[in-house]
Image (cartoon, rainbow, N blue to C red; front, side, top):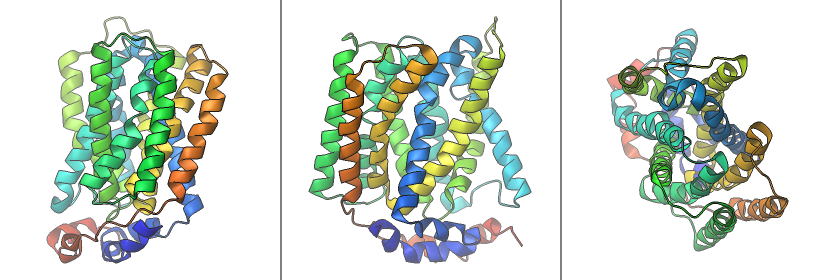
Length: 339
């Protein structure tokens, strides 16, 4: 994993800020990194079907970004119990805000609104472009430089899955598709920024910070829109909301950002090519949406492109000198609240 090796100095400097946790992320084996990435993708794959299931009961604003309210409270409790800083250091604040806009507010809100008018399987058409968008963002923001071979496999996987899904979806382009495109762009930006930040702090810490920073915006959205007048609360809809708050917003991101930091944003991001297929499988199981046998063959083809993309070498981004230069600043002191 060239990205981890290229940033070993950065992670070493970050150890003082995070009690060595950030450095351990870079030391993950390739298999562990891919396993964590896959675990995150499985968690994300459940998001669209579960969101569509919960929207009629709670409304898109509460199910979308509103789920971050509960997740943020859990994040605060976790940080307090573990005696970690509740707020990020000042030098990381802008990056955390970007992550919050993309992953905490933008993507959940836009996808929840889109799922009012499109099926979870249809939404997977746009989600198929998320790995490619993440790779582009990684090149621009994380300063990674994937090889031409990597881009070839990235393009092949994206074309394969998007082409298949597009043929199976209705051809009408509506407001829901616009919302999904914007959601993909914001999410890719959040992933890239979160992956960069996770080189200096543990992925779970980045996730908690983004939820806490995004809390005021999410609360404002929920208060302005209000709750549905006739919420149909059942144990299933409540369970769906709890999964979105804990599974999608916390646990899946813990795994995902740790994998991005260890294996590289562009490279690990290609594992998400599997998400649309998994989403359609879960939509069939949970929502009785139609499932055809060709999907299995497409899934095997996509799995092959993911495997080949994982075998390519992505040159590491230069270690950010600014992080090391400020390791002794007051921000770093504030972040070292563990004994």
